Length: 313
Image (cartoon, rainbow, N blue to C red; front, side, top):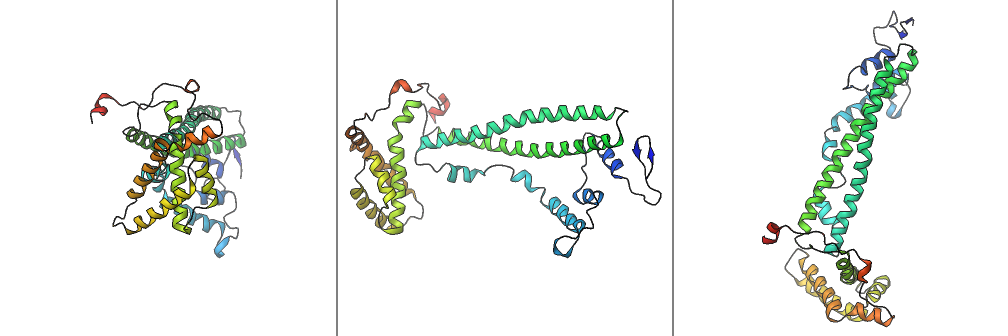
């Protein structure tokens, strides 16, 4: 191997490009076709090393490269946090419509943080690439300095593509969550922080009642942990247990295969306990507290407002 113009030349008995020439060629255009996994291993002299399955590193890497090619199309479909069904039925399966709105906020805030971070990374990568391309024009660089720059350029392009897929997935999630928010506004709209505070007793009772119902189905009684939760909400546990046992019998005899009967039962019972029997208020008063949130500690700007067209629907 001889030096010619600060580059590695071809050997007399080998018609393949040297790794320097290979990587240099890869870095000459904006759309870099990165070296494949097997090619990199071969250049790093790992291709003939023994690996699993009684194959060499090179043979297994070729299989891996083929697997990558075979599954590349999946990235565009599954580059997001969740699909729309999971968002609505799993992530938004809270016990209060207000909690679902809060869940939308939490999820979008997380995605916003990711996108804000990646947008600056995109700019930094673009600037870094431009700088490295300009640095390559420096004739004083040694062949090894050029080699390092070309490797960095190739890796930058790979990272940029990975980030692009991540951004695309996050954008899908944000747009899906925004649609869910618009749908939720039909049920929960024009509220502020004080309104959210006021609905907390109902939200917690619905959670406790639902979890207690699961206890009844599984063991015929409310477990100790759920009893404590019901007590904290101010409910008479023994009366609740009796009602839930009766409901389970009714549910079992129902001809319906959906769980709307349960949702309606829990919703009605929670509202009755809070609004009619005042269970949360009475428990708070017994402890010397007021059950009414302090209004001055809440932001009173109404959110989730409906347009005039939406109000007419």
